[in-house]
Length: 260
Ligand code: NAP
Image 1 (tube, rainbow, N blue to C red):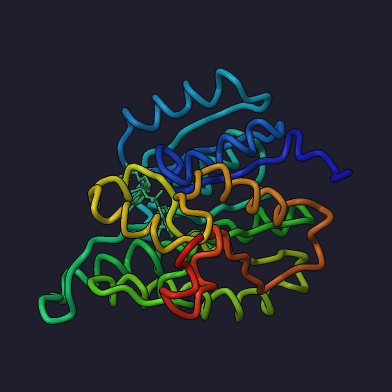
Image 2 (cartoon, helix red, strand yellow; image 1 turned 60 degrees about the vertical axis):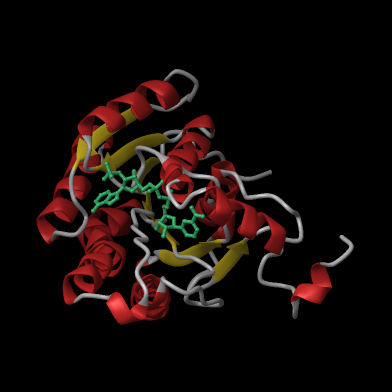
């Protein structure tokens, strides 16, 4: 039903584990050539081996830090060198250290904004010429329900960064529309990843209790939403968001979940 993505060139930042690896696996299964970008070379190599073993497309890696413009440019250049262009950018790399507002430091805020916001903006900027040259550029940001829709104590800086991504997205979508590039975002709820596991069992159990489906999401759930937004058939959708959260943002009160 959808035009196959076989042979398309896809960048996934934060592709070595967590949601990014899930997104990369979904695109590789769809036959796309996928470039995984992250900082740790060993984990990148493991992910490439894992995904490459079952995907139909080629898998390549580049070690780079999206917090720096030079890192973003290195990632875009690697995709062009490996696959001859860029059709899809999944700007997914992000960090979510927990610190209460009273304890926040300038360095912590700078780091979260450097990775989550600057990393998104300059990744897209670095990919622009190649995305435009392909004639059907697709950009899918990984934002979050935290910030754009919900709040969570300890994550005020993170929530601000995830909302900032959407402010960026709306103007980028307008600016890039004449270049036939769409810019959309997936807003995950709580997805089972390495980063989330670091928050501990109590966090996981609390979230499971707050989700109508009573389970965390899987990384592939985000991958499928990103894959749809990357299709030719989604070409008239731009500047939009898809919430993938098992219904987490829906309850008006805890009473709405009682007896489920
Ligand atoms: P994760 O398990 O911690 O994985 C993070 C990935 O990003 C890794 O590949 C990591 O590799 C890479 N990364 C981190 N900092 C980077 C940097 N400066 N430059 C390049 N790569 C970097 O995180 P996750 O849970 O999958 O989250 C991924 C995205 O989804 C984030 O944007 C996050 O805000 C969003 N999200 C997650 C959830 C959730 O429930 N998990 C919910 C809502 C939104 P290296 O450390 O080797 O660089």
